Image 1 (tube, rainbow over the protein chains, first blue to last red):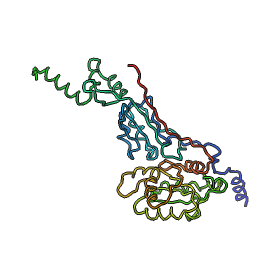
Image 2 (image 1 turned 180 degrees about the horizontal axis):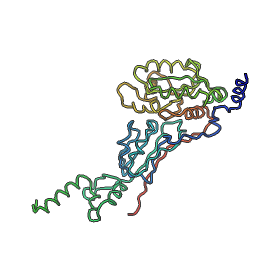
Image 3 (image 1 turned 60 degrees about the horizontal axis):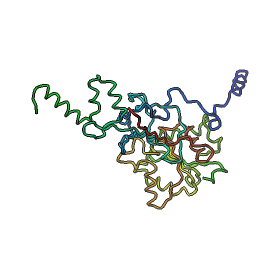
Image 4 (image 1 turned 60 degrees about the vertical axis):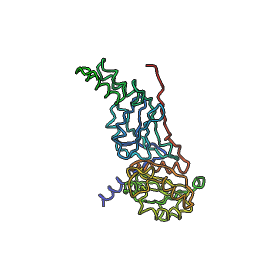
Length: 169
Length: 160
């Protein structure tokens, strides 16, 4: 009798578990994978996230002078693989979850990066930031190679090897 | 969406072949922790009674005729809440052989049958949090402001 009365009193002292959500903001647990955001200042447009994205929410294509990295949240499964593979740490999963929107266009993030043209044939092949990123890793005397498109680079390298071995053709 | 301003929102849960992740979160929305019923949101058993249709899944071909029948029957529904990435844009199944692939492609099929496109709230997430769905319902009722906007960044040419 006494034990049940103590249990009853301790039970009615408890607060309800219901959150007051739309009126008060809630906190998300640690490590929560929310909306992925591309930091446009850090992104170099390499496309590593596009390769890793399982549902194809991220896409990359060239449009005019720009390379466009496009993230469509309506297809994202919030797995965080883009965050894992990004070499620049540009993609980050935030703790935002209030993503509901009235139109499909609002779920899009676009990053438009300028393209670099090959110094020999003039074809656009990579973004300027990507070329700069590669340049920094090369020796100073090899840096001009970063400004060539893959095809021209192969041709030039083959010619250089040919000259070094003494054949003039 | 004016009509649901004044009265409680009754929702009908329409599963179009989803993996049940979103469906569990829809039921969680009515569990004690989130308790959508304190806001007047009630789960009803017929699309005829519904104000909002909570739509989950990528619309598999097997479910397609029943989904069309349910949406045709929902005469009183004023909004559709597309819950989860599958319903929003096809999700991970967007190019699979046996799915229609998201609610927008379903609307194209409905258009051929002469059913107008109802106002739609997209709630991405895999699955979305119950709070995210509640926020979507509040957005459909006009009680919350939309936070998500399209972001476009264009790199400007600088001198080297």
